Image (cartoon, rainbow, N blue to C red; front, side):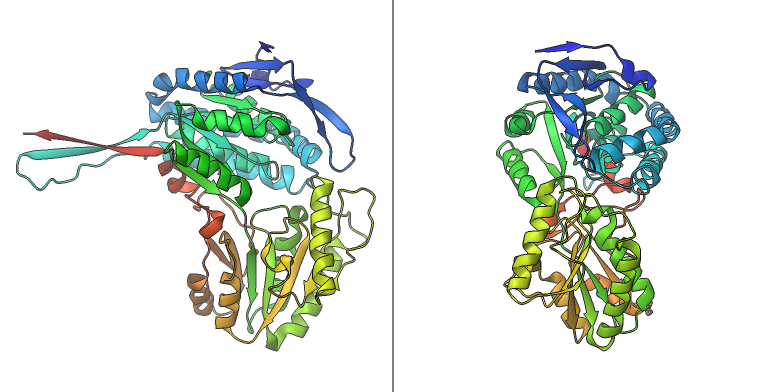
Length: 488
């Protein structure tokens, strides 16, 4: 059972219980769940929990809003996006605090990176909206003419995770909205206030009611609600950012109903350090790439592949850099749940029991809470160990030593994933050659594997997904072509 609770999200006021946002109304429900601060273990607030009926109501509200929104002029949509960007920037401190509280992210990653990157995303999208255009191909038969239109799909389902809720949450609906679609955003139950804020920003910016509907649900209701959303006839496309395991289930369900998907999934990113690399730069970028946000980023560095001629010097630099950035004098990274800590400890301990060695860190160290874990650097990892192939999604990275560029590329490609990678070399030609050989959606030369900005297409290959967010490619994902022919 649900009931409305006004529209206080439109003026930026923060509700005491996080509501759903359906059809322009803030909706409370009889069901709710606690939201816990992973850094302290304390319950911070409650969130309304959607039922299957609430989820369907969100789809129906989006479908009702679609005819009018799809006919709005590009300039009108642009102006809403620009206003949303200004509001988001103005409310940056507020939203940054939500993210720190709900995800345990440090302020530099929350308000210092996620919020301003989302602001830039909205402005970048705004500038692209007016460029959407069809084409006039020349037909082969005399007297036959054609127009190819680009049209929105209809209602888009966006499913985004907790770890970068603003960047990943905004992009899951913003490109679709900009292209004239309406949306349902399924929030992570770990950071529902962050997702409420996304709806609040767009509401305050003047987005018409029903164009963006935000729902969250209890963990035990995930399968029923997600299936109901995907199966609903009004849902025309799904985009999902999250684990490969869950993405496979969502894609399979969508496939039964012949619905297209955009998938940005897990990763096992490699950073290749070649013989001519700047060791200090490489070490700094590898440490940041591996341990930023506790390694809880799909683009996090999981493998560091270093040429044997510089292996000793590089590992010394790597250890000293990790100690300086994440040693005992620095706060221990916070993981969103104890399960992440347990998973990483298990991966490392099992690898060590099979012959791996610890280069840096103490996997047995106990921190102030069971959600904290300091970075671990491991060497002598081989293929029989789970750490070799599994995405750790935590503050764990493995170092591998190779004797050639070809061996480095082969090892980087020896994974089912292909989201991002990095190459460190002082020779741009070499860097570009290696980048072309790596099976990955992105490769970054002389910078860390974590790199995402609105004007660059973002997505993976292999089991890291398909399709692209960001830039013009992100808009094109949510437009379909219609060919119309006519005779002279």
